[in-house]
Length: 207
Image 1 (tube, rainbow, N blue to C red):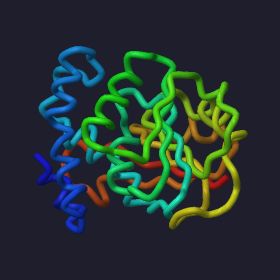
Image 2 (cartoon, rainbow, N blue to C red):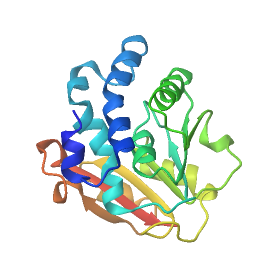
Image 3 (cartoon, one colour):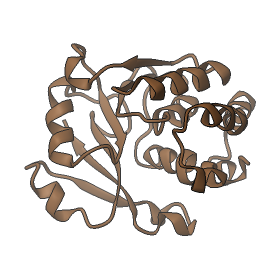
Protein backbone atom coordinates (compact mmCIF):
# COMPACT_ATOMS: atom_id res chain seq x y z
CA UNK A 1 0.00 0.00 0.00
CA UNK A 2 2.76 2.44 0.85
CA UNK A 3 4.74 1.78 -2.34
CA UNK A 4 3.43 4.97 -3.94
CA UNK A 5 4.63 6.94 -0.90
CA UNK A 6 8.08 5.34 -0.81
CA UNK A 7 8.45 5.95 -4.54
CA UNK A 8 8.61 9.69 -3.90
CA UNK A 9 9.71 9.77 -0.24
CA UNK A 10 12.35 7.02 -0.01
CA UNK A 11 14.00 8.40 3.13
CA UNK A 12 11.18 7.71 5.57
CA UNK A 13 12.13 6.36 8.97
CA UNK A 14 10.83 2.96 10.03
CA UNK A 15 8.33 4.66 12.30
CA UNK A 16 7.03 6.81 9.47
CA UNK A 17 6.68 3.75 7.23
CA UNK A 18 4.70 1.98 9.95
CA UNK A 19 2.46 5.01 10.45
CA UNK A 20 1.71 5.37 6.75
CA UNK A 21 1.04 1.63 6.51
CA UNK A 22 -1.34 1.83 9.46
CA UNK A 23 -3.50 4.47 7.76
CA UNK A 24 -5.06 1.97 5.35
CA UNK A 25 -6.64 -0.22 8.03
CA UNK A 26 -7.49 2.73 10.28
CA UNK A 27 -9.35 4.60 7.56
CA UNK A 28 -11.09 1.41 6.44
CA UNK A 29 -12.35 0.84 9.98
CA UNK A 30 -13.43 4.42 10.61
CA UNK A 31 -14.93 4.84 7.15
CA UNK A 32 -17.18 1.84 7.75
CA UNK A 33 -18.68 3.73 10.70
CA UNK A 34 -18.48 7.34 9.52
CA UNK A 35 -18.17 7.90 5.79
CA UNK A 36 -15.49 10.56 5.25
CA UNK A 37 -13.75 9.06 2.20
CA UNK A 38 -15.97 8.35 -0.79
CA UNK A 39 -16.62 4.64 -1.22
CA UNK A 40 -15.90 4.73 -4.94
CA UNK A 41 -12.29 5.80 -4.54
CA UNK A 42 -11.44 4.25 -1.19
CA UNK A 43 -9.32 1.63 -2.95
CA UNK A 44 -7.24 4.56 -4.21
CA UNK A 45 -6.80 5.99 -0.70
CA UNK A 46 -3.01 6.10 -0.89
CA UNK A 47 -2.81 7.94 -4.21
CA UNK A 48 -5.90 10.15 -4.14
CA UNK A 49 -5.78 11.19 -0.51
CA UNK A 50 -2.45 10.41 1.18
CA UNK A 51 -0.02 11.06 -1.69
CA UNK A 52 -2.16 14.00 -2.85
CA UNK A 53 -1.77 15.54 0.63
CA UNK A 54 1.99 15.05 0.47
CA UNK A 55 2.21 17.15 -2.69
CA UNK A 56 2.45 20.11 -0.32
CA UNK A 57 5.70 18.64 1.03
CA UNK A 58 7.23 18.82 -2.46
CA UNK A 59 6.66 22.56 -2.37
CA UNK A 60 7.53 23.36 1.25
CA UNK A 61 9.27 21.48 4.05
CA UNK A 62 8.17 22.64 7.50
CA UNK A 63 10.70 23.43 10.22
CA UNK A 64 10.62 21.93 13.70
CA UNK A 65 8.11 23.91 15.71
CA UNK A 66 6.29 25.33 12.68
CA UNK A 67 2.57 25.84 13.35
CA UNK A 68 0.31 24.61 10.56
CA UNK A 69 -3.48 24.82 10.50
CA UNK A 70 -5.53 22.52 8.24
CA UNK A 71 -8.82 24.32 7.63
CA UNK A 72 -11.82 22.15 6.79
CA UNK A 73 -9.71 19.05 7.37
CA UNK A 74 -12.47 16.58 6.44
CA UNK A 75 -11.06 13.12 7.04
CA UNK A 76 -7.63 14.52 7.90
CA UNK A 77 -6.24 15.49 4.53
CA UNK A 78 -3.73 17.00 4.15
CA UNK A 79 -2.87 17.27 7.87
CA UNK A 80 -2.59 13.58 8.84
CA UNK A 81 -0.06 12.62 6.11
CA UNK A 82 1.88 15.86 6.61
CA UNK A 83 2.03 15.35 10.37
CA UNK A 84 3.62 11.93 9.79
CA UNK A 85 6.13 13.38 7.35
CA UNK A 86 7.05 16.33 9.60
CA UNK A 87 6.93 14.92 13.14
CA UNK A 88 8.66 17.99 14.64
CA UNK A 89 6.10 20.45 13.25
CA UNK A 90 2.81 21.16 15.04
CA UNK A 91 -0.47 20.64 13.21
CA UNK A 92 -3.97 21.79 14.09
CA UNK A 93 -6.79 20.11 12.14
CA UNK A 94 -10.05 22.06 12.18
CA UNK A 95 -13.49 21.13 10.92
CA UNK A 96 -16.96 22.35 11.90
CA UNK A 97 -18.47 18.87 11.42
CA UNK A 98 -18.04 16.77 14.56
CA UNK A 99 -18.13 13.35 12.89
CA UNK A 100 -15.17 14.33 10.71
CA UNK A 101 -13.04 15.47 13.63
CA UNK A 102 -13.96 12.23 15.44
CA UNK A 103 -12.42 10.27 12.56
CA UNK A 104 -9.30 12.44 12.41
CA UNK A 105 -8.77 12.14 16.15
CA UNK A 106 -9.27 8.36 15.99
CA UNK A 107 -6.88 7.89 13.07
CA UNK A 108 -4.22 10.09 14.70
CA UNK A 109 -4.45 8.13 17.95
CA UNK A 110 -4.45 4.79 16.16
CA UNK A 111 -1.34 5.65 14.13
CA UNK A 112 0.45 7.20 17.10
CA UNK A 113 0.63 10.68 15.57
CA UNK A 114 1.37 12.91 18.53
CA UNK A 115 1.98 16.25 16.80
CA UNK A 116 -1.59 16.98 15.71
CA UNK A 117 -4.48 18.47 17.65
CA UNK A 118 -8.01 18.22 16.33
CA UNK A 119 -10.60 20.95 16.89
CA UNK A 120 -14.33 20.74 16.16
CA UNK A 121 -14.96 24.42 15.50
CA UNK A 122 -15.04 27.06 12.79
CA UNK A 123 -11.74 28.66 11.88
CA UNK A 124 -13.23 32.13 12.45
CA UNK A 125 -13.59 31.23 16.14
CA UNK A 126 -9.92 30.35 16.65
CA UNK A 127 -7.99 33.06 18.45
CA UNK A 128 -4.45 31.86 17.72
CA UNK A 129 -1.75 32.49 15.17
CA UNK A 130 -0.11 30.06 12.76
CA UNK A 131 2.79 30.02 10.32
CA UNK A 132 1.07 28.16 7.49
CA UNK A 133 -2.48 27.31 6.46
CA UNK A 134 -3.09 24.19 4.38
CA UNK A 135 -6.29 22.83 2.90
CA UNK A 136 -7.78 20.79 0.09
CA UNK A 137 -10.52 22.46 -1.96
CA UNK A 138 -12.65 23.35 1.06
CA UNK A 139 -14.12 26.57 -0.39
CA UNK A 140 -13.41 29.27 -2.96
CA UNK A 141 -10.08 31.02 -2.52
CA UNK A 142 -11.44 34.47 -1.64
CA UNK A 143 -13.41 33.00 1.27
CA UNK A 144 -10.46 30.90 2.40
CA UNK A 145 -8.10 33.86 2.39
CA UNK A 146 -10.59 35.90 4.42
CA UNK A 147 -10.80 33.07 6.98
CA UNK A 148 -7.10 32.47 7.49
CA UNK A 149 -5.26 35.71 6.70
CA UNK A 150 -5.80 37.26 10.17
CA UNK A 151 -4.54 34.04 11.77
CA UNK A 152 -1.25 33.84 9.88
CA UNK A 153 1.97 35.47 11.04
CA UNK A 154 4.62 36.72 8.67
CA UNK A 155 8.03 35.06 8.94
CA UNK A 156 9.65 31.87 7.71
CA UNK A 157 9.33 28.49 9.39
CA UNK A 158 10.05 26.27 6.40
CA UNK A 159 11.64 26.27 2.97
CA UNK A 160 9.07 28.88 1.88
CA UNK A 161 8.04 31.99 3.81
CA UNK A 162 4.92 31.58 5.96
CA UNK A 163 1.70 31.56 3.97
CA UNK A 164 -1.06 29.48 2.40
CA UNK A 165 -0.51 26.12 0.66
CA UNK A 166 -3.71 24.93 -0.96
CA UNK A 167 -4.54 21.81 -3.00
CA UNK A 168 -6.81 22.66 -5.90
CA UNK A 169 -7.70 21.40 -9.37
CA UNK A 170 -8.78 22.85 -12.70
CA UNK A 171 -8.43 26.36 -14.10
CA UNK A 172 -7.67 28.67 -11.19
CA UNK A 173 -6.71 31.98 -12.79
CA UNK A 174 -9.99 33.82 -12.30
CA UNK A 175 -10.58 32.52 -8.77
CA UNK A 176 -7.07 33.40 -7.63
CA UNK A 177 -7.26 36.87 -9.20
CA UNK A 178 -10.28 37.69 -7.04
CA UNK A 179 -8.17 37.30 -3.88
CA UNK A 180 -5.86 40.18 -4.89
CA UNK A 181 -2.85 38.18 -3.74
CA UNK A 182 0.14 37.02 -5.74
CA UNK A 183 0.01 33.24 -6.16
CA UNK A 184 2.56 30.67 -7.30
CA UNK A 185 0.98 27.67 -9.01
CA UNK A 186 2.72 24.27 -8.94
CA UNK A 187 1.29 21.50 -11.16
CA UNK A 188 1.48 18.27 -9.15
CA UNK A 189 2.01 16.31 -12.37
CA UNK A 190 5.53 17.76 -12.48
CA UNK A 191 6.60 15.67 -9.50
CA UNK A 192 4.04 12.83 -9.21
CA UNK A 193 3.47 10.81 -12.39
CA UNK A 194 0.15 9.11 -11.55
CA UNK A 195 -2.64 10.03 -13.99
CA UNK A 196 -4.84 11.30 -11.14
CA UNK A 197 -2.59 14.35 -10.73
CA UNK A 198 -2.81 15.63 -14.32
CA UNK A 199 -5.06 18.58 -13.42
CA UNK A 200 -4.13 18.93 -9.75
CA UNK A 201 -2.08 21.82 -8.37
CA UNK A 202 -0.62 23.28 -5.20
CA UNK A 203 -1.10 27.04 -4.98
CA UNK A 204 0.93 29.18 -2.63
CA UNK A 205 0.91 32.77 -1.43
CA UNK A 206 3.19 34.40 1.11
CA UNK A 207 1.80 36.07 4.23
